Length: 512
Image (cartoon, rainbow, N blue to C red; front, side, top):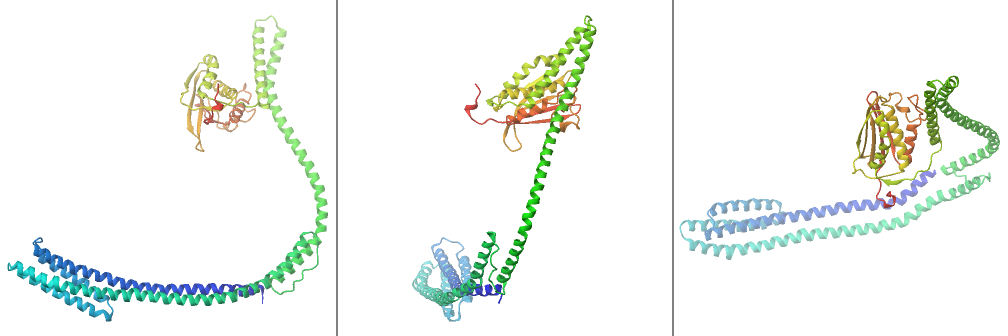
């Protein structure tokens, strides 16, 4: 027998008691359902008769109201209630068992007498014999029919209790006794079959797996070890033989792996050397790119300086010499500006953030550049409301970033223009509150082909530019936890937005 079949037999023996319990539970549930249905039917008949009883007493109430003179349509109501009694009486009779039919006959007899007395009372009332009608109703209804109806009611309800409730309880008791006997037999069967099935599984599974585990532990320690002593012709035996073949192949391949490791070590050394050379080449390429950018930025001013010096040397007393010397000073200033940008780009300083209001910081930078704006005939529009929340930034770094962005905006409007600077609050893309500082000009704008490169180092669209202004501005903003955004339309202008998170309530960061 295969290992799979032995397992199936063992688990089948162990699960047989569970299946028997389930079958017994299903059968008991069905029997209990039948008992409850019988009880429900009996209670339903009782509820139907309660409607009959209520309708008869309502009919009597109508008759007494007629005798008291409180109801004008008593005869009509008496007839309607009689029809209601007949309806519920017919329905109740149809639900009765054959041995209970005499109860319905007794109730019908009382109802027919009740109807006859009511007709007689109404005839006497029509003839003006009110006292005789009242006497007839009292003698027949109060003293005869109602006591007789009460006696019949007692008998009907007694039989309903005996048959419905007692029969249902007896049936449930039978079901409980049968279920107890079934559970006892299933328990005995489980006690016998459970250990037997567990023994079959243990004999078929535990012993060979233990031997196989020992062989695997030996192989895991690197020892080939003795062959696995499992001769069973089942799945465990097949697994043991496959494992033995695998360990043999592993043993044979170990020598090959050692030889391969030696070869791979030599190749890895070569690869490491190659990688070092590639890294060195990338570093040299980066340095070359930076040197090219610096050389490009310095060559034109130096050439201009050389030409100016030559002219001054040749004609030191000429009227143009002074203009050339002033031009040389301007070129030196430009060189100094480029070198300052380069040093700031290559050697960033630490950030010292404080909590402060953005409006006064922006206004201070605009005041420092007011003269330059006036010289360029640039109209300034400022919107710096006091309601904007505080931010946590290094004021020096923010001032440098604003200087670079405003200088670029001024450079984009050489022949006058309009510069708008504002602060506001907005909700960021991730849902947090932000303070937005916006600098917008109406200059020439940036071509669409260059918009993706404006933040790259040494990229510029103006001959006098260093290509580092926006790069450093973005670095300064990001060092302070913000981000810099730029949008531009050729011929309409450029807008730069500084976005900083709103400062948390922390008095320790409040500026002095």
